Length: 92
Image (cartoon, rainbow, N blue to C red; front, side, top):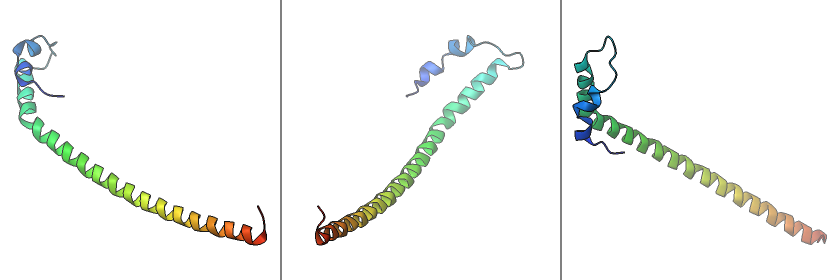
């Protein structure tokens, strides 16, 4: 989603908003200014956090894949021994 800053700054959007009894009208504009000043920083921090979580997820995935590969090798060895025993005994 992209922010279209000029459209968000139109006074008609905020001017048509319902008024809260204890909220001065200029307070909304102050909040809006704070949002536009700090939003890029907040979203960059969120992106950095997401990248860190993705890297941790990739590491976990690599560990699990290695563990699965090891288990597959053990099963293959066991099956090979089983087949050899069946041949030695003469079972089909």
